Length: 419
Image 1 (cartoon, rainbow, N blue to C red):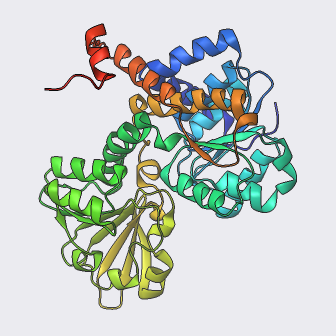
Image 2 (image 1 turned 60 degrees about the horizontal axis):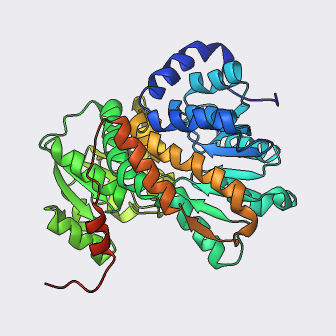
């Protein structure tokens, strides 16, 4: 095994138990792993993965390893690593891991470079930090790379920008865009886990509070739904008229962030853009406002501007930093502005990550077979993979659905029949 860098390999026993618990909720990935063990579709392939180091990710790594891949894992977020899981992967499965919860930005990028030292044939990314570092700083390794996959919205945006500029040097499958990913992982997984992180960090009652959701993509839809379900009064802010209109029709108040700051008790950004909550927004917030992010990078909240505005800062609870302004108002930033569902909680429930990581495993298998035929651009997950995962998930849940009769099939594919 290559070298590794984890907090403490002696934490492995706890990580093993939690991985087993998560695996029970991941029946689709289990089925893929059984097939991979027999067929070895990834034999001889080196994979560098930059993902959140969680129990669910660990089971994905085991699946790729079962398929014959030489896997190395590093963290895609300095605060999302579960140290006991990292230890279990190293100790029990001999998968090199470079990830420590709370690592500095310097160590974070040192670990990304360690993942690139693996000389991958394929990259597996969550946010495109691995891919962008490879293209900017380690171009000598590009000739080895045949393809990659990307897990999240932010990363897909960055990769499409690279492809548009002609800067992307190999094909990448946008796993995030699979229907079995963004319909379920983003909406139901992010919705539940974000509230879980906010509540664990603050122990506040949501009922009766005004909850401001920045954005109305799939992740934000899920959070708005869950916050309303727990009794919060939800306000949505948007820049795109289509999702803004959808939010209105879904029954939410929609307004600019500058207006929302007058009412909000809790704010959460889920946009993938920077400075969604900026200096002029902090200036209008109420005393005691709570600000969190669940949109991948901490740039969504302009924390440097808040630091300049503040006369003092203190850690009042784990993951809760209180900034006191000159006029005495206090603003609370959760999890250093990083993904609150992973910083203060455990990320998405395993049952939704089952579908997301099934997409990752099968997309990597597809890429290994077809990379040489693909252009240097971003591709969607093949529809047969996406629908196949949905079918397997339903079967695992014990849910049956109807089947079209030959007559119905013929009718749907004909044009002769009218009213």
